[in-house]
Image (tube, rainbow, N blue to C red; front, side, top):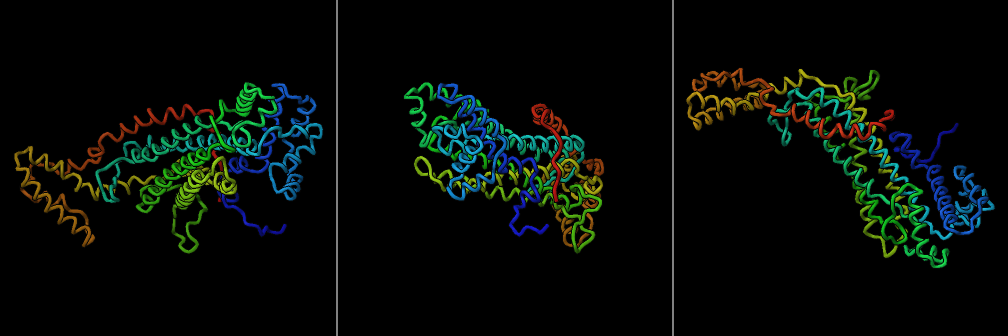
Length: 476
């Protein structure tokens, strides 16, 4: 078979899960359109419009049997996607042709379908988030009390633990999941708002009966899985909703980018690495390389989504009056691709966080190189307690520390601060080796890990226990 010369979207071909790709695919979208036509007709029939059971039977029989090629042929002639599908559906359901799309505008179909797809995509992303949080929680529990060098300004700071650092990554994602659940809770149907949001066509269908129009709106919303519809709309549901959702996806990207960047830095220190397969090649030229390519890809995908954030914001800001169509092409690109990219990044993150490789001896070596500097406050306090002058002792430590640091940085020698202090009579009463126990400098880090797992992670595990499923395959 000849190779395709058409551009292939790498989000589909290389990165995203099949589940997310299929959710945004044409078969799923257009069968959802048909579901909406069925729901509309059934609800109108229940409220008294002359729609027969035969018509309903035909609509339901062909709801999932979408004749895509016929619809494409109609669209080439009509230049209108929704009307093309109305005609294609009508060809399969001749008895129902006249009542398909009755009283509706195109946005009844496109917007309600998008809201259904957005809801399901958010639910899938929520499950993926919960899985990454769970993986990080398990990692944090294992390494809750493994001391390591902490950094502020990317400079050595007071120690923390490997597990405590992992909770920082997990907590960002917990906040993202909280925001996702909020957005899901706020999501509503557009339902049957009509051409400019006034429901005029439906009021005409029901001969001025406002109550029936209200009942139709609520019934349609409930039949497609929403408790209610947006209070008021123009022709479309508020494009503010798209902006809020992509803000959320961008936030997940920000969290993933931060944790993946930390892993890349730790890999350069040879302290923590992502999993590396037996036959994986790190570099085409440098055979010894073990590059953090999955973490790098997470950053690349996350950065793509972060950059999309401004697009939905601009679209929401430029909707004229009751609507303008310059949102359409933009939304077709941005919404699916934002979800596909975050889905791919989360699949990678679960893969990485579930099998991180930790090198305790290297971690201990790096901590030992800096610990003498960090122990100076304890040394100072013990020397003062033995009767020394605090200010004089502080100055002596400062001079010894500067000399030791110069030797480390300028001459590449070991940190000999303790030896210098041991040779100073002012510190003769202090057990200098006794102050170098790493566990003495990690504060409540292990207990903070335990508390975080109990208070933040366990409730998420409980909420998502029935949605854990099977991990998606990491592709390429």
